[in-house]
Image (cartoon, rainbow, N blue to C red; front, side):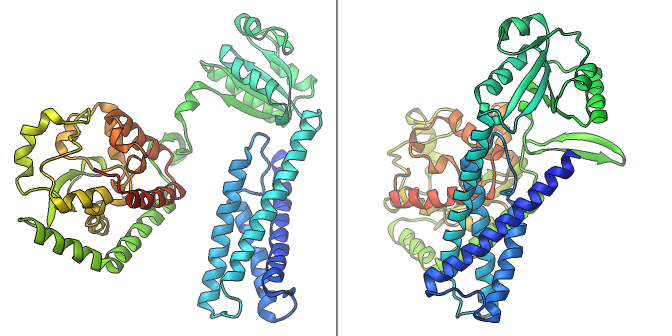
Length: 465
């Protein structure tokens, strides 16, 4: 019943989102053309209907039609901007494909700005009203908490954030829990008959918070909640290890909880691969004069090959040759041993600010990161990605601690979080490794896009070594 009610409400809100987009299109076109265009011609009517259907789908896809009791406005803003970019991009593509030049792309940009502003402002007003109503004791849910000392933090959060709209009917727990909570909420003994409490009292949700979960107790509570239509929630320290990469996998009819510590979204990873290939091809094609110019500069200023290739370690230990423009003298590796005492990096990485092995043009290439350009060929070959942890040399990997090996669980990249760090030249090796792991844990196409933009900024700053 609750799920059915939720589905009806969310469908209604998605329809409202699409109607707001419809109105935003009229307002945007009025601002641009100076008149309302809805009934002016057949194409305009079709465009309005497309917007209505497209925004209905995008509202559900980006979950802007859902109501969260504890959702921050920053997440809402990101989702609204995301759906607007995708929606306007799809409309612009349609205008291009069907030669609707009299509509043009600029009015669609107007529409995107107006639509995003309308949706975000109206939703902020709506959610602010709901939070205010909950703080006043309206639209609340009664909850029963079953737990131990690990439930203390959650209880205090519920009491602090009244806009969540939760009212604690009782806390079933041991003596230690009761002593820590005091008289903040109604306390019930650990042996209280929870089934009877759910049946006799008005309880909307049961929340189970134990550090050491008891399977028999969980199954009993879950059965009781299912019988009476009460929502069951469970909190556990074990869930701190779980992310959005956790899912149920079935071996025939046997469900198995699967936890992956790397991105698992097949579609998004494929989109990342397609983006890598297309972007690399375009970079190599468009900037071919730059490639040639750098090659000529290297050849004229120092003896030796134009390119430097080195064996690197890729995804899950795969070895491949990485290509860079040569920025050092040809016997750089032979001279490395005599310079080890000047190494400014901790861990297995070797780097010094004024490396005597670097050629004149090499300093410029390193400062602007232009020496990395040939790695777009590595991306085309499938060994690398545009964004990802930098590929290490095998000697470095042999000195990794066990936890650092996880940075090899994702395809290496030309640029990464470390490379856009303002203080990248002073970052410790361990912090560098943690940056890469944080990127893997929080990977998204949006994050890749942000890193690419910041990489361009870093290249223009020319502060590399």
